[in-house]
Length: 516
Image (cartoon, rainbow, N blue to C red):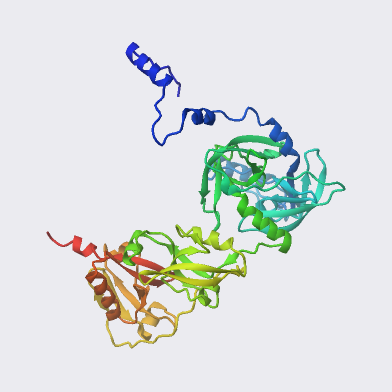
């Protein structure tokens, strides 16, 4: 969009000139001197780049893959492209043993030769002995990894350790002389708006320097449970993966890992793993060959305003426990379903996604305080952090609880639910386990609070307001208590095919539908 000059009338121009000549000093605003300083960036990045470039390397990984039998591969086209079928027909006609339109079956295809698949990325040396940091996805599945220094020296690399979840890998190269290296800085000190420099090897062109600012912090881009990315507008392209993001002191404050791009090129939205997270993992990879993350052994869900209100919690913060692993740290610390974790190891859990990162960064074997919201008040327990197991956590088994079959489904007024005790008839009808406890949902009314929350027949109400229920009367009693306390919602622990989750149901919806 073209920019045009503003045309001011004489009076307006004079007023504007006076205003610009003597800006007002308003309380709480930046001074003119600080604003002027903020407008001046570095005169040049050349000295900084010259100092850092020797420690940034190109990483090439290769692996053996089986080529498609009988000829060249078909180029990749966008889904639905008319060229896709065209090239497929062409290659089928010209591949040995292939059939053209109307042709009979030819001789069998020739043996598929092996070929090498290569991947290019970036990395950086963090120790003069030859330790190199990069992204795990740069070397994932590689048979061979080579590191090329700035002076074009090529060295074979061995993989010391990999962190698939955090996308970090540590390599080791051998050299007859100490190698140039860079050090990790404190990523927590970086602020939005600070200058940063990214160095990498996009498209295999060689060492490339780009500059920008920290655009945002704490980005969760749904790449894993520990997402806490630094966002930057420094140009990052394919091939920059694994390269360092530097502050103006020449310290690594991030590992360039991902970009947001509709086209595959940089549009000024890049993401880097913070150095404070990376350096802990790198040290663990060096010492143990794998990451040693802390583990609590709970399944959690977000605390919504409805959940917070139903439990008397003023702010919808923290992480709600929806499952506890048998014999895990949480189980041993007497943490239970329905507890809301407000603090872990003296760090506030502002929302659900904060907890996995805080726990993961905790030292294995350390005893930490855990502040819970339970029964309308704060409770503190002590938990011993364990090392995260490789397999997925399993939810605690439900205790056996048999129920008689004689009772018929009972309607819960205002919620759109019909409930029945769990007897053999209900176990057979809804394929419930022999140890399933609670009250089964037999029917859900359309447009009801239960339907709006996605409840369906076969789901089981295990607890109401953090108290176990074994009959429809138990559920109705808990709901009546909530209504007497003028609560707007009631909280239920629901067991479905997808697992356990806490579901708040509105107690005001039925009142809102009453005629005025």
